[in-house]
Length: 308
Image (cartoon, rainbow, N blue to C red; front, side):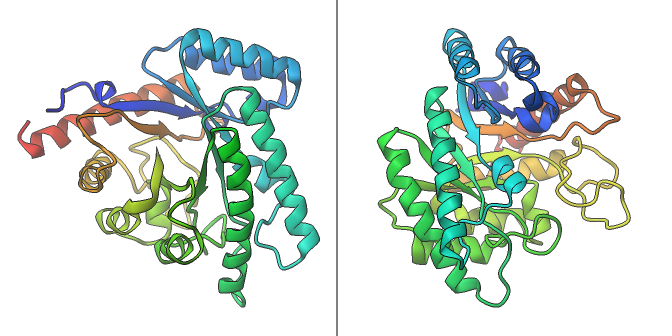
């Protein structure tokens, strides 16, 4: 049986670099943002990157341990910022990307992270299958190092033609990656972001059903598919944004689909993190309140529809 409080059944987290986009630029700013989350008992996980200095790693790990909050390492910002490509046809480019991800794994281990999230490189229209195979080879190399550190490796599905235009940018490509190239015995799992499902033009229930066997972590957020809107694309506005695709109803559908796959289960706590991007006109506290209330509304509707 599920209870009315969503936090009783979901290990709720927050993608820090999205909510506090300027935080990673200065160590003190990052720590202040982390403290904001650590002192809110609603959250049990924080996801972040930009923790290169050893002093910062030591301070951060201590605060996480004391507050009993888990953390995930975000390698996506590194891949975007440095234009890394783990599936590049150029071996030197690919090896450089692997080395940078190994550095990220070291940072993740230093702060006690139990997950590392990464993405594929740009979409390769002409040689997609070969690029996917090279990407998988790189992932499996990284997976061995991640397993040695007891860190779960997560590959995030993005879009292929809207905004970030990634190689792993559709439900079909994601299924192909895991079915053909990623061993079922590996610790590599899928990071499924609700906000990316509209961008790949997929139905929520159908996408979750197809991807269910590999889901290892989940993000929830909003996205905009109206090209004339100022926040078009992977902008993660607040829930209820006028041109947005995701709100209470979509979260309810997502919960039902995750329940069917077994990701959500009354007997264990499932990890779900908010990913809302704080734009210049937004305030983090407003977005956090928006996310909490929207999730609670969706959870209660989900329970009513199940008759609980």
